Image 1: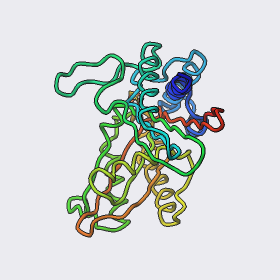
Image 2 (image 1 turned 45 degrees about the vertical axis):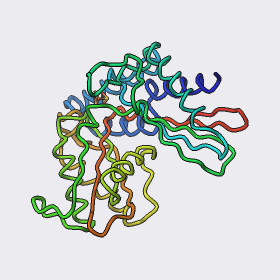
Image 3 (image 1 turned 120 degrees about the horizontal axis):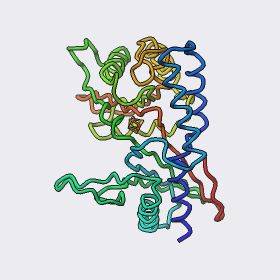
Length: 288
Ligand code: SF4
């Protein structure tokens, strides 16, 4: 099926070809570090790794993550059509070693061997009124996923109230707790509001933004910039070796909440920030 081959290429690109915005942010971070410093050496290794993965079409990290898809498709088309193509593409990508087998049955602990399992890959479907299809993919590494956190405000231990100052405190706490884990420098996605589930969903959706793309809401954009500056003063640095760059960016968004609840979900992704998008219009496929 043609769609299967296009999705296979999307997976290959996501796994092996880091997006230019992320690569530039890593190069900028490298240039900020002093000659001979451990941070500069770590960045140098990361940059070499990115180049080799692209040249050799091999995964930039041995953990190729969990596959999370978002599909925006026109009214009248079926979800089944896309789901079948994605499953076929994931199996083929695994056999071609663009992906490590990462779908484990949670009851038996048996790895399916082909990245297919219950809710794996996970596909979010959204219908829209355009006459084109957009398929977005993120490959979410397990180590960085493990350092994500959700807070319920108020939080007395952190003296964090139900306001922007409180939100700020819990985000800083999450990054401090992640140090040494999750393969810094990280990118931070934050979802304010919603319920237990939707706050995390919102936090992860931020990862489809490009580095430097600010929230259109001025208050949240200022929060992003302030956090980016403050988190980079923590000195955690790449892989926890110390340095000037602990995060490459911070993306925050907010949604409605129940009057009795105030959740803040923080998702963390490592430097191997693998996200790609493809658009199909008039049978032509473009990748971004
Ligand atoms: S956290 Fe990221 S870079 Fe580190 S092992 Fe996992 S996928 Fe790879």
